[in-house]
Image (cartoon, rainbow, N blue to C red; front, side, top):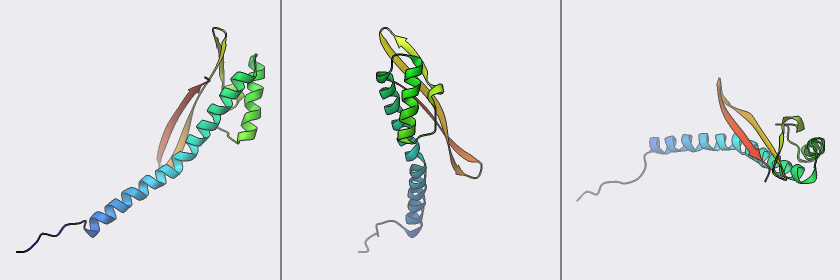
Length: 114
């Protein structure tokens, strides 16, 4: 009795390897933008808690921006409002990640203070 062979062919392994490599490259390009978003969110939360006027909040955000090394937005890009007695700071920005040739991945980030 002849048993049927099981397993993955060489072509299948090459295909899986190419797909995994593409996912790894994409992750390597997207992860820095996500960590930048987390730094901006942290800076927005600190700025909202540290100031009572629009100018104070923008200045606190600019100080945090300098300390955390992000460039996606500045203090003038913040939307500052009041919700009852609480100060709410909102932000939104787009980040383009070049993939290859004319192809780009556009990530839209949006957040608000807690």
